[in-house]
Image (cartoon, rainbow, N blue to C red; front, side, top):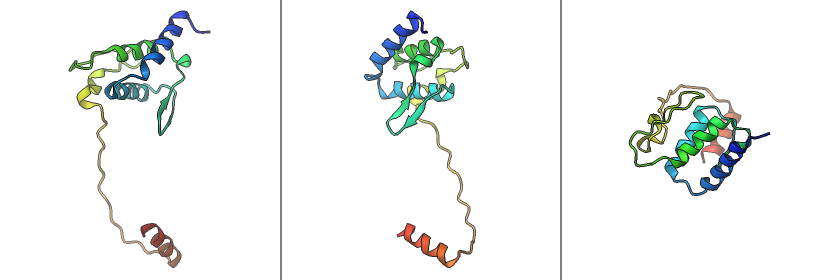
Length: 122
């Protein structure tokens, strides 16, 4: 059973999530991913059962929701994994995608493989 404090935090978070800026949504997303908080993900975003989250995570969700986005350094120390918001400031909210080099190899295809690939390339 949840404590009254966690129930209040859950109500507060639910009330604020709909009106969050894109930057805060990204910071929350990275916090959930980086701290391995159980969630499910689909095209609409993340689903987190807040009633299963420890109060420490709920408190940090509230801190993120209430933080001043114009701050250059958002230094929130998180007890569970020493998560540092400096990594996810408004200037760096999108992950850097590393490009890999393409390796070309000469391969021999059977007649059926060639036919199948011709459908996917047209």
